[in-house]
Image (tube, rainbow, N blue to C red):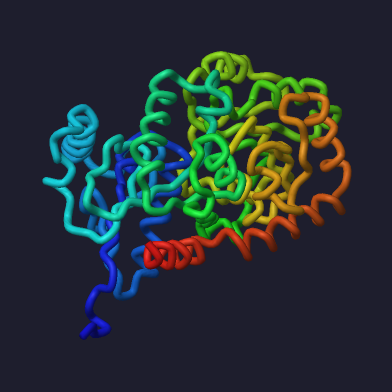
Length: 367
């Protein structure tokens, strides 16, 4: 007979993304594990490798020391290179369900398997990815998604794309929105000498910062506002970084901003702009909404779904449309207030990590 002290489920979460330089997936993994621990009650949430706690989140480096990082990543690399050997089984704790990250190519058999579907960009826009990324995505689809007992998608758009492009049964995929850290809700603005529009995200082709810079060049309120761009360099970002290094008029490039400084930076913006070509969820959009900041974002992929009534939507490939939306929003304090309030209401209702964790535990129970 079970008592209240006995675990009902043992769920093993692959924490490998926390040992890598990463943005969205690392953000998701970090806060998801943290909140699963808080919400689990009798259930046991284990991590691979075993972590007693999570240190500070830094997207640029591992959460662990060098020795442990190299040991774990070496183990994962060896398991991927020699799938016939049960290397993962030898080092994994016993669990009822193993939730695999996108770093494990050949998960062990004989255990319930789940995974998270983030996006289908490698399939839809292969030109925006490295060959290694495309190869890894193919392996993930073949060896993990096709085998998994059930899957989590971080948006309805990602769920539909995965079913259509990979031939997966949509009924096996459950949409569970990620959350936004609580500190964004009610965040206090960081002081700034000049009002600014903010972009936050990795500097890489998919994020479409070059079109944003083209739009900014003809922006008629450029003397009254700055364009602040925050984010680390990513794949094939050299061209964009060169433009930023030339210091275009009214543009401030901050580079990588530590996690604890982001809420104040977001809350201080007059508007947030995110013209990405494709997203699986778009964490910065949800973070801006949680801070009550009006958003301009793309009319593609999941971004209309995530933003709801909290954003102006634009064709991300049109500098003219992006510029017109910025001018429309900044010319109207009433519109800013309307979009900010609508975005905040949606974020409060939909994008809370405790809600995500509870829904995830229910998902694991059904598995």
